[in-house]
Amino acid sequence: MNRHQEHFLQKNMKDVSSLILAGIQWFFFLFTNTVVVPLSIGHNFHLSPDAIAASMQHAFILTGAVCILQAVFGHRYAIMDGPSGLWWGLTLSLTVSASSAGMSLERIGGGLAAGFLLAGLTMVILGWLGAAQVLQKLFTPMVKSAMLFLMTIQLTMNFFKGMIGYTEFGRFNLPVAALSVVIAFLVAWIQLKGRGNWGTTRS
Image (cartoon, rainbow, N blue to C red; front, side, top):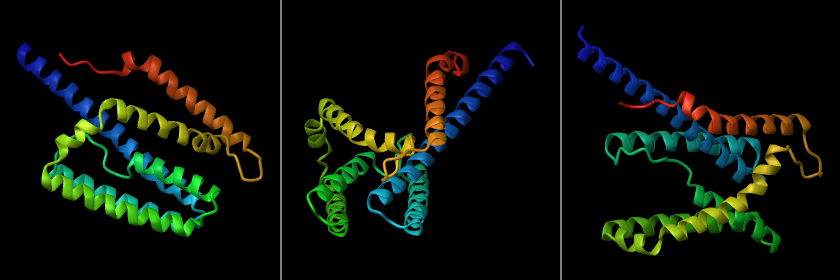
């Protein structure tokens, strides 16, 4: 094996290892998103554990089916398919605000289901008419940034309560809180210190 073949083999091995690591990272990202969304929404709607488990199973099946369809027939880009973060934040915001206004959870859920169906139908019609360029002019990066910022603020309290194991009785779970702090520091350390050591470079 000459030097050219050896260099080509090493480059291919780096590309394959990078692809495998990226695939594993993307899998856990999809997995976490598919698990957290049904759990948080089910908790806000006071659903039973069986109902939350059923919604989680449906989310896994639909997410897997959509990913396969996108990989075979669709855009084939590394775009997350699964429960939408924007709809997730909107749902949590409406459950909190509408419950404070005295509306029942059944009425809120029915309105959200009808809204989701109408939004999906609207997107199909707009896509069929080729209105993507018009939407891009309306939803500028500034608008998207403001929307994501507001959603982050809305979700922070729900995540924080879950991290410390806060209950409706005003208590929190010390082991859960300690584990959450350890995980947060570990992720921060990996993000700050591990990028240069574990990242792969392409020649």
